Image 1 (cartoon, rainbow, N blue to C red):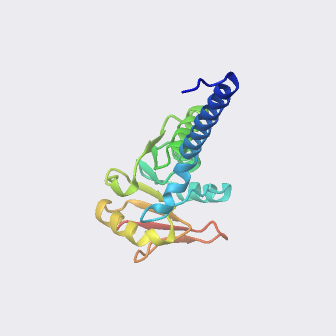
Image 2: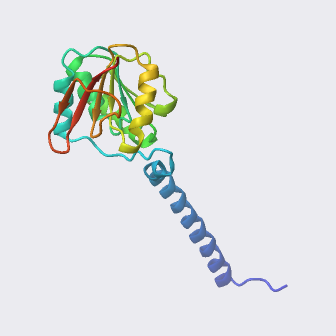
Image 3: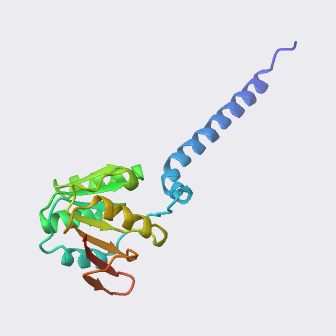
Length: 190
């Protein structure tokens, strides 16, 4: 067996380094992009859509006299939870499946000095909602019926529910706020 020349050894090392670099890039890309793509593969697709400033101001207006603690289901980048915590002074929690958004939300709560805002990586379908007196929902249309059943079975009477973008089928709102794409439905758990 013939020995490899220096040039051949260098080419072989480069191929190995390029291959390792390529696999490393693919791995990092999947780690960064994965949390944003995987919602499409769940039973209820719930993509990240940030709340507008207008939606946040409408929610805060509806939180006058809210009872605590408060939870935001699918809290995304945390802006709603932070605004609600500041506006109401209530302990406000956001749950989100996307790890990067949870970490970002925790960072924003720290930077904005909002100690009563907390965030956890959690599946809303596996989270008990019974401890909460105010529930915020930014759900997709296809999940709202199942979510309505979960809310009905877990919430105590007189819990406030604010649904953004889509109403909860079968529930009668005590108030509807129509403002273009920033619609809200306010419910009291019966």
